[in-house]
Amino acid sequence: QLETEKFTFQTEISRLMSLIINSLYKSREIFLRELISNASDALDKIRFMALTDPSALATQEDLTISIAADPETNSLIITDTGIGMTREQLMKNLGTIAKSGTSEFLEKLESAKGDVTQIGQFGVGFYSVFLVADKVTVASKSNDDPDQHVWMSEAVDDFVIAKDPRGNTLGRGTQITIHLKDGALEFLNQDTLKGLVAKYSEFINFPILVWSSRNETVTKAAPTTEKQDDDDDLLEESLDKDDSDAPKEEEQETRTVYSWDRVNTLKPIWMRNNKDVSDEDYVDFYRSFTKNPSGEALTWSHYKGEGDVEFRSLIYVPSAADPNFFQNLAEKVHNVKLFVKRVFITDEFDLFPKWLSFLKGVVDADDLPLNVSRETLQKHKSLRTISKHLVKKSLDMFAQLAKQDEEKYTTFIKQFGSALKYGAIESNTHRKKVASLLRFASSYDPSGPTVSLDGYITRMKANQKSMYYLSGMSISEVENSPFLEQLLARGYEVLYMVDPIDEMLVQNMPGYNGKMFVNIAKGVLSFGDDEELDPQDTDAATKYQPLFDWLKTTLSNHVDKVISSKRLTKSPMAIVANDFGLTGHMERLMAAQGG
Ligand code: ADP
Ligand code: MG
Image 1 (tube, rainbow, N blue to C red):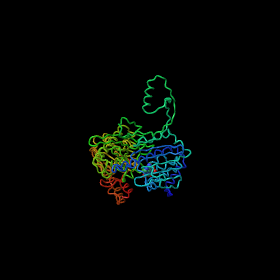
Image 2: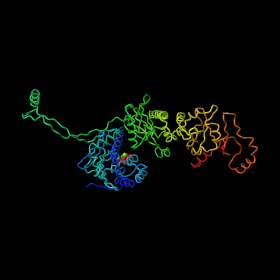
Image 3: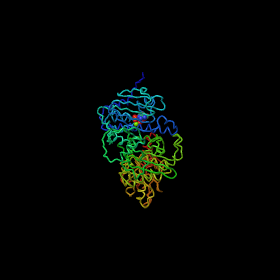
Image 4: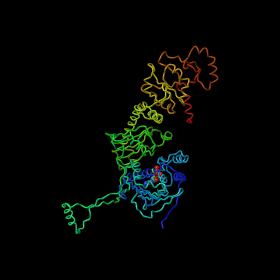
């Protein structure tokens, strides 16, 4: 008697499964994509392991995914020869949630705002199988477990695990048997299945085989009546036949032949020549590897590095920052997959500096040793060279986008402008180039951010020495500031620094192309266009001295001095920070950070 143990799903999984089971999602076919993606991950893992321990493959040399429909039992059987799962792993991986963010996804699904096709991004793709199944059996054999085990579930709340009564039928890997719901029998149809597999497996780097049948009509020669004694006779007979000019009698016969048909092509998109890849292919690939079927990229760069290091890269700029991207900047973001000679190595790698970690894509290096651990690899000097190339290429890609498509570039700046500013602060090497990519709003185009520093400089007045800016919480706040009046009246352009990171930016990058930034809310402003303005209006000074004295006494805890000034044209007064003081904006920023 085999021991069967019963377990309850983690609550979130029960919630997810009941949602999935009771829903009528149109896009339920995506279960196939999720299962193929898991199979591919499992194959990646064993292939990676085999780099350092070739004997890991001994249990099963072929690395494939195969899919078969069994109309007699209304089942679909998906088998991979990947890393497999031990009993413990079956229990843990198919019973609990490892990834954060799943709860938010659940809440969205529950409020009908979620999109089930995005499930793969939340670490629970497997459960999409219940879109089409009423019972699922997962048999798995890992090198780390002497016995093959099965996991089985048909209910929302629990699953069972047992030693596989059939024994170790899989040398290594995982076989998922999906008992289809009555309403999902279309997935037994061979053509439907092949179409879906083709659609979802285009970018899977392992052969995917679909069990196929086709009818073949064969033409058979009419049986001869002569007795055939042995091979020699047969040969003679056929020779005789060829020589004879008697008409041949033929018979048509239709028979069903079965075969494993390979569905996907194996050349990864990044290995192809970019001339041979269409924009549509690039977008499809982006969606496939980000597991977001509606994902969009603003632009991408497909590059072949030659010379000091050989590598290929395909790097995308997403159309929007991931939620919490900026909050999580301190954590490691893993958006780039590293391959070495087509073998997936890891996505837990820092190929980009943090400020570029919003980029997504793949890098495939030729010059890296395959048979070393990830840790050793991380220290390899080729990787640092590749990293350098990638940063340079990415900055070129941004510049290219700025040149080619203003609208997209503005979107890029709105999404990732702060990340670039972070780069201008962090990177001594790239500061100048990054600064040229920055865009701001200014009095020239308050609807920004479209104003580049180079653009500002070309519009500077003949005698203007500095780049004027004003910072604040919003464009409207800055536009209503009394500090702006005098500069606008004199025809100067003022940059509006309304991003919280801007103050830090100008502190770390005090100038650009020989022009210094000057905060117009600070100290004494001197213009180069006419006589230096006397900051103190001496006439008014005598006339209003009693008022100034009264203000100074009344506000003695708050102000240094009270003076008359030509700084304003319409407003009666303004509070100005001294050269070394904090502006009102900076004080608020610091208060907001609890500093
Ligand atoms: P994710 O793939 O994002 O981790 P899934 O819900 O798709 O989330 O899968 C959960 C886990 O189950 C995987 O991380 C993996 O450990 C395990 N798993 C699923 N399918 C397979 C498989 N075919 N072979 C080995 N492990 C698998
Ligand atoms: Mg998955």
